[in-house]
Amino acid sequence: MELGPHLRRIGNDIVAAYLIVTDDGITVVDAGLPGQWNDLLAELEAIGRPLSDIRGLVVTHGDSDHIGFAERLRREAGVPVYVHAADADRARGGEKPKTAWSGMKLGATLGFLAYGMRKGAMKTPPITELTEVHDGDELDLPGAPRVIGMPGHSPGSVAIYSKAADAVFVGDALTTRNVLTGAGGAAPAPFTDDPAAALASLDRIAGLDAAWVLPGHGTPWHGSPASIVEAVRAASGR
Image (cartoon, rainbow, N blue to C red; front, top):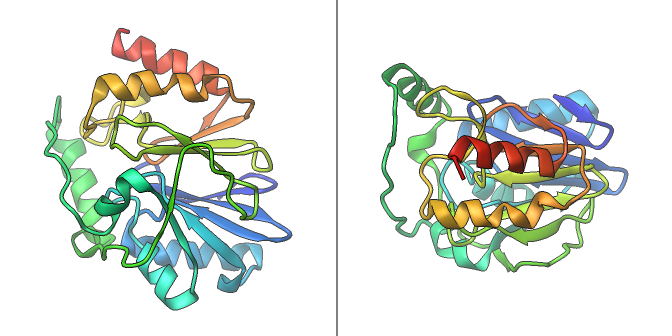
């Protein structure tokens, strides 16, 4: 799905990943679920680009619904995978804290789980080799993605800012579709390790100049980072 001249989305409002597409190659942001590998291949075919044009995969955090096809892409195409150092263990298959399934509604939750099962969520391979990144790093990848530390959802959650794509990729730093309730609109994401820290981290993207804010779950936000930060804070009551 085309969002802009250098920006594509794969997946849907349940689970999404993104491509930064330039003449020099492609950067993938997040790897969704394992079964979205076929969505990636279909998107590449639609834009007439080979798998070999992918230069790197940047993961916004180490949860299983964001690393889905990462190991396959690394193993089969030799694509390096970049993960914040604080989430490296999680991405390698380490333990994560248990979080409350707050406000869940049966229909929405079952829909999320069913989609995950269809897309291989129960068989997500850990990333066996990765490159650790840190807050402030600008990666030598198409679109010059810059890493912005957003601790809260997980210790190593990051946003990825690309001026070329005119976008900020936020993973689960916020959501526009709560996968547990089905509610749309900008709001804090469920399954967050430290909700207060996640809200505080939103200040780190509020001043960025971008036309798109792109969560891992929900409709792409066509508007400024400042506007979605305001909307998330309003939804949280803070």
